[in-house]
Image 1 (spheres, rainbow, N blue to C red):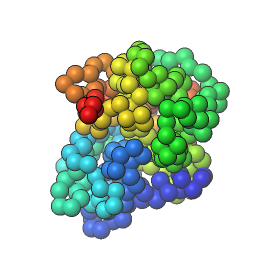
Image 2: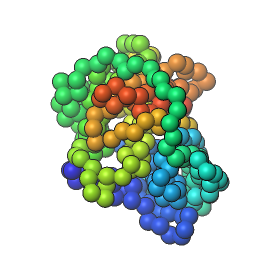
Image 3: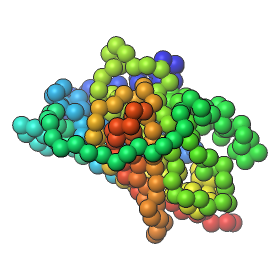
Image 4: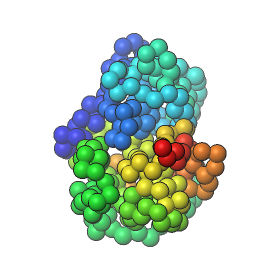
Amino acid sequence: MNDALQGLLELLDLERIERDIFRGTSDAAPMVPRVFGGQVAAQALVAAGRTVPEDRSAHSLHAYFLRPGDPGAPIVYTVDRIRDGRSFTTRRVVAVQHGQPIFHLSASFQTYEEGLEHQEPMPDVPDPLSLPTAEELLPRYKDLIRPEVSRRMLNSRAAVDLRYVDEPPYGSVGQPREAKSRVWFRTNGKLDGVADDPLLHVCLATYVSDMTLLDSVLLAHGRGGWVVGDIVGASLDHAMWFHRPFRVDDWLLYDQESPSASGGRGLAKGRIFTADGRLAVSVIQEGVMRVPHKA
């Protein structure tokens, strides 16, 4: 486990202030001076999960990003125990900074039970080890991406080994493509000991799910995104469904596409598969996607 992954695990290890109140610290998002949305979502799910019996696993979350988070201030997470049923448990979490809510999450947990089984097939993609790492990929675009931006990107993704199957949005600026993007990812190190907690694997997947999902919107319009500054945007809402168990320290394929963009917003959906082809997670997100006005 590298230092960056250890730091991310510490970021998700919230301080418990009261029975249902938690406090977390923050890192700034790589391209903008605000808290990374995936961090807030993951921390909120940690807070919810710590109020749920261990035999109940997260099966869905629905969240809204209300205000930009301040990376220089702690975030307080208040958990509302909405329902504790015989099979399902529901929690609502509000994240607060400077006296105002910045994020709202509803999450549902379920005890394991047998049932109907089917799934969509996994796409046919190259092996992740045949694809370039971020350290190998970014230097190819040194004429497009400023060195300080490249360093910030590498630092922000040091905890996660994320590899693009296809060329990233900033690699095809001005060339609209099919609105599909695929990446392999896993943590940069194995999770063992106290870190090997099923809830933590789900929370880490929630963290990573916000990193690249809107890439597919950018591709449809030949935009490079926040890396090159030709789009101004932010996450609006985020939903995830956890279908089957998975480990985030094993390779996972994130298959993403955008069915629509309109009204200054872009919609993207994703499917996360395990390396052996099991559909583990479904994701949908909408974000603000604005083209900057030229001076």
